[in-house]
Image 1 (cartoon, rainbow, N blue to C red):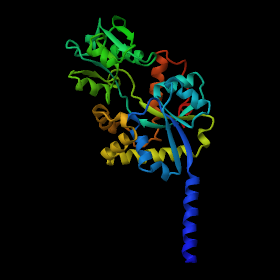
Image 2 (tube, helix red, strand yellow):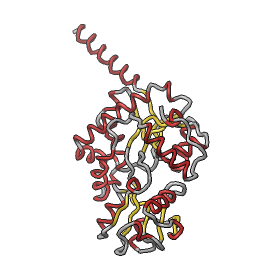
Image 3 (cartoon, rainbow, N blue to C red):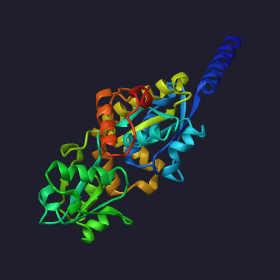
Image 4 (cartoon, helix red, strand yellow):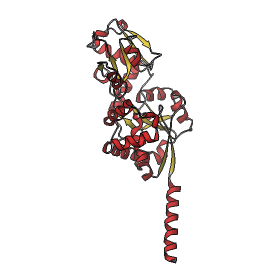
Length: 309
């Protein structure tokens, strides 16, 4: 009996030590939680983060524009952001740095539902809407120019409504806010037959849609970061092996997201998650930096070591 009590006590102490060993990681999302965050959620659900000794808290921002600033101020440990935004942050000397990639391909598209637009040349004299100044409007102009279209012949408007509605009501002829894993599905569900132009096919260098940022001042010494990335990679693998089980867990946690469109988006996003989140394509990041500088979005391209660990 004494031996049994000693064994149980040892197990209890071990379990307590394991709980105490879990290090907290506050991850600020780029937006409210959605299928783009499926890999992070699955790393939680599958125990991948726990296996790495981490207790990861996903936090939805009150204001998406403040995400990198809160990270720089030390209010959170990691943040989800966008590769194009990284260059402007560095240009403004905001002390953040990329440490990993969540989605390693562009998701945005220039899309139309107009019957008379079959190529980018057909946008001459038309109206195109966008939502993110300094990124989407620049991409539109580059895409048009790549096909010999005078960008000044196209009216660009900053949308104050969602692109899907603007397209379906023909308030605009094209929109640069149609993501291939969500709004594009929504358009098709609503009976539209969209024509899609991918920016990476028309003059815009390929880029990572979603990246993981850390505080530049502490990132190199923070041992939680490689543990987080290992857990994230394991989460991606588990998600791809068990997509439906992960979806069921997701909607149990967030029942308000249990819609047919979100389920479609969940499936559509699976191929876009980076399998090796820590991998850094220096040449690709350099090319996109030169593109940003060439279009006057940033003053200079910093050394690549300033953008990523």
